[in-house]
Length: 324
Image 1 (cartoon, rainbow, N blue to C red):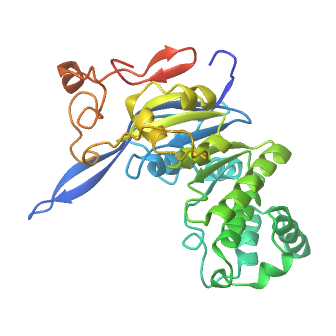
Image 2: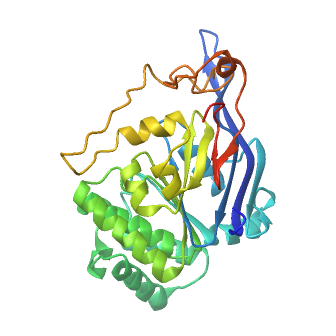
């Protein structure tokens, strides 16, 4: 990463949640995010990949301060995000916005969608009255919606239209960075392509930085300039998208890529089916968290006993594996 100037930096981030277990409700920690470090440069797209329960959404919520980490640092453009409060935190939230996975769940069903987009303009005192009305119309047009849709309720729109409203609402305050939490996973394939094209256009025209969360590597391939792969709350591989997707170093990344369909019936790809389910984040296994399911032929007692470091295995490409 010597040729990249870090703009958003995450250092050894950790987040646990207390969960009640057993008849008497004994509380134990659920390890959602453990020792995560990342660096994102201005204008690039970091694709954050992993199966359900890997900690992607918790990390996203920490990045925008919807959750407060237990330990670690988040530095945005030289500012310690976790030290912010009051007006400074409100100003930070203008710069970094989030788009949620479920466009219907993120909108107030009793509020017209135009009012939902107008709300952040008024909260941050950016526009009122006719000026706010005109800016909402311009935002709707920018995300490919007829401004006349401002007077509709969320249930009157399709899933793709609702997600466009969510994007317009995030753009209303003029952010520099968008955290996109699986923004197309709830949409039909044809609508996914339209929303992804919209996000690429917005990034090009506005100079946005994206943290793009997904479980579909085919989608990440279209969007990301860098990729970070999460498993059981940890980053297990990270590097340039072209390198990670072409020559994955961690066996978990290899397994994920083997499941991506190839649009050529003549091409044969060996599918790697991982045994069992991911371990519970309430009781992570010792050693490498992936070792109970790992298909690597060199897996041994070291994997079961010693946690591998996230080391560089190729130029600018890191993996958390003893035998990558």
